[in-house]
Length: 142
Ligand SMILES: [Zn+2]
Image (tube, rainbow, N blue to C red):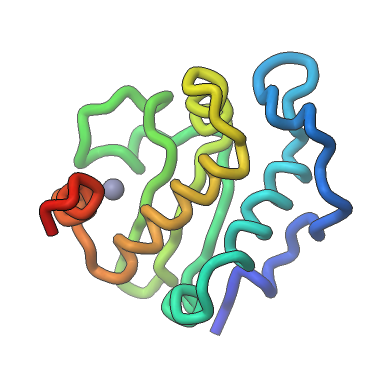
């Protein structure tokens, strides 16, 4: 069984400097810093969510490939993450670095918070929730 914690990704270092919250431009976080944020977001999930995702491959790409967004009509650059379950492959959560950086910048949100939001959203898909169900929970309807 693979788990994100076992992946050969950049280890979490010391806390990132405050200026990593300005994600676009010369001070954009490196891929290693971004991976550290993803790893930290995963470790901050409640234990039952981490258990739920124990068999999930969590990966980072700069942006979604067109094939990853086939079911949707968003432009690739607008997709922050995706969840993919295919036969004979481990379920995979993708986090798309460039759109996440842009989203955090556009909404003046801490990058770590956006990474966490996307990870939780995609993990909820792994748990069987649909976008509609998540939207209803966010709106207080469910
Ligand atoms: Zn979704």
